[in-house]
Amino acid sequence: MFLNRKDAGRRLADRLGDWRGQDIVVLGLPRGGVPVAFEVARRLGAPLDVILVRKLGVPWQPELGMGAIGEGGVRVVHQGVLDTVGVSSDDLTAVEELERAELSRRARQFRGDHPAVDIADRVALIVDDGVATGSTARAACRVARARGAARVVLAVPVASAEAARAFQVGDEVDELVCLEAPEAFGGVGQFYEDFSQTSDEEVVEFLDRARDLGEGGNVLPRDAAIEVDAGELWLPGHLTVPPNPVGTVIFAHGSGSGRHSPRNRFVARDLNQAGLATLLFDLLTVEEAENRANVFDIELLADRLLGAARWLTSNAIAGGGPVGFFGASTGAGAALWAAADPEAEVAAVVSRGGRPDLADDRLAEVRAPTLLIVGGADEVVLRMNESAQAKLRNENDLVIVPGATHLFEEEGALEAVSEAARDWFVTHFTAAD
Figure 1: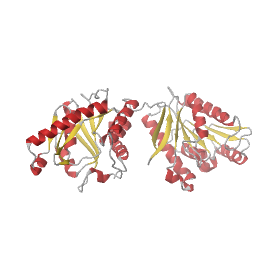
Figure 2 (figure 1 turned 180 degrees about the vertical axis):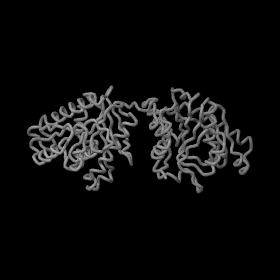
Figure 3 (figure 1 turned 180 degrees about the horizontal axis):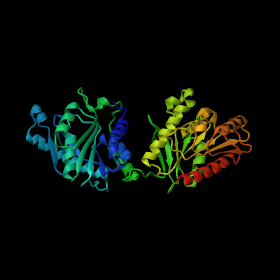
Figure 4 (figure 1 turned 90 degrees about the vertical axis):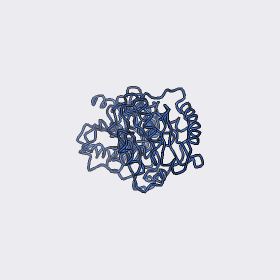
């Protein structure tokens, strides 16, 4: 059902979207639940912490849980397992003492000098990678109640049908959110393509990353490698957010290029210095890019751009403000195609050495102010852009960089592109704001 815990977390976050903006704390169950919880917390803009419980394993069969313990002296016992395997009270006590010591160690290791996030009078959203018997999740829910949570919600990608029914009729949780609850359930791992173990170090890293995002979930480091929600899939990208940005420019790369394009990165740095946030991301996956036809599938590329713009705007991940497109070569065709969408909220478009002919039938529908930048020595593309300009019905301009060829490799050519793009975006973002 799920590629890995990251995939499960994103799909779970989609189901939990109505919780965004409410007073919630996302609590991941270490270790496997924390990567899932991180994605949920990040998408919902909520703080992340761990909720510490330990499974009580049968002494001679540790993988079989006979109960669980949690912070605050909470203990949950699975009486059916105890009766079946014949565990004595002394055996149970001995296992519990060992697990209590491990619980304290983990609290110090995971949180370090940071205190536990206060959940009193807040919604505790408890997240795990899956639920089999439910004893660990049940203990976690009781720990949250003991710490004063106003409401306890258990959210998991998958649970056994038996455990899901038990939570729905029990009093441990106020709400259960479960994406799948199959009757045929052999273990949580069977529902993941990649169910590799999560290390203690990874748990600490997820908690540190969540603190860097801040409690609102939208404050990124100035430069951040991120994954972009482009609609039907997530694609790798790089986001740069200067202080108090006036808007964000999303780059649409040309054929054979991507987020590492040296020319687009050059332009992006100049835009950053002018107070513009920039998002450079790959419009195609590695596998898709191997098929040359995808590079010229302008409608597909435009859909990815629009998806990224919607995601960027809805999450205010770059600080909010207007959004514009900077397209190069075939990417310019995709940018213009996307800007012609009647629902597109695009404040400005800049095309560098672009192929506007690839969006020829939609040019008259582009509403966003559009700047076409072409090299004076790039004669074929220059004619394409002159023809395209005649079809545009919006505010537009054509800038010709004297002596420049298609890649603007000549001395001062790329600087001229950056200057023209910067002025265009700043002018129209300011007007849109």
